[in-house]
Length: 291
Image (cartoon, rainbow, N blue to C red; front, side):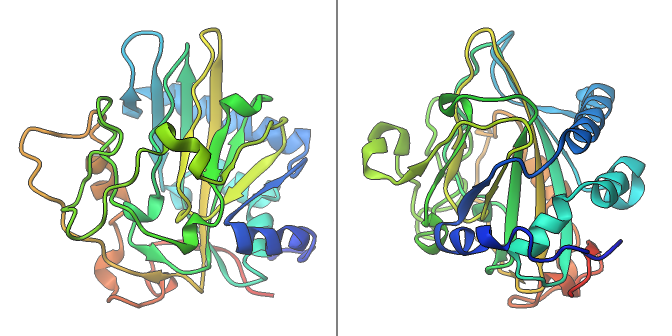
């Protein structure tokens, strides 16, 4: 992969990202880049929708997501890394360090779908360190009440238990509460939290640390919300194992999400010991070399 020819262009956003764990980068992608992103989304999501998992919903008010980490196997991912500034932005936020592509997800929320439960991705993936970022990119303009919301500076605070996305209890924990505390019912006490929520235009990129508590706002009854997420890490991120899952019996994820995590997220970690840098595994591809 090519190196970043304009390292530093997005550096003004780095200080805010480091401090708050979340920053909006307006107009980060131009229309040509967004058109390529939309083309990749539509071709992949429509072709492989049978692989997409339903998080919530039954009928019209549904939330689907499609997870993939096959960057080395698909031309579309190579094009996205080579023909857009997505990886360049990640490298800038990492201060010019080696930058690795981890995986992507495509989200599709339709017809008045409920909000996605508040959670931290680092409760599902055994990653720690400053060199972690997720980009959330909607394909349509959005009002603040329909975007992904992020709690500022929560990546520097408590790591809570991973919720199981139970539609009846958004705080139902995946692990024993002796290992990690149950996540608070944030939606019922929003005034206690410093929630970052902002309107977004096509081409805007929301960057946040996966240790930040975040959750997707609901959609209107007439709305379809398509969004793309890209996940990167740098040579400053390390492997930190998570607790073993408690015995769930028949109480499974409503969307079988942990089955997906077992297939995708845990792949490659068998090469690492606790504290090892993630880049020591040969599972992930470096998309930008340090400059």
